[in-house]
Image (cartoon, rainbow, N blue to C red; front, top):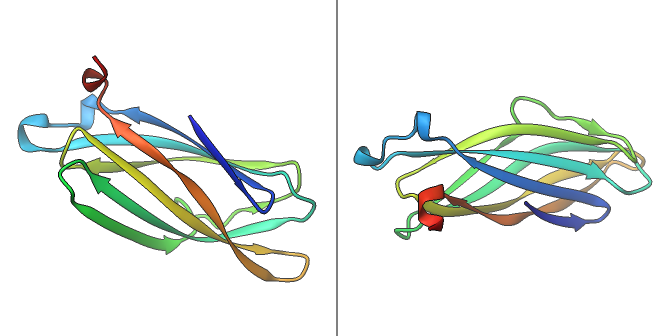
Length: 128
């Protein structure tokens, strides 16, 4: 698991290879990732959007942007957290992701970006 904190918002990410949804013979590798977003600050925040950078080990790069996470724009109160699970497919058995969330402080409606730490997507057999 990797963790990074920006402006009182702590983001932790854990990855899971999904062999049942992968097809290595066709260069299709599926990974799930669990994200926990914890508000360690003093003010409620709302997650508005996400921007991901996705890299395969063959040098391919993709960017994904969109509103919220898994269809939600959660409000996270101080001392609370929001957790979700999503997925990513790669054309190689190794890669990585990183990005940022656009947040809004509800106290004064100011926007700020929270860094999503770089994490690796690696099929377990590559770890041997």
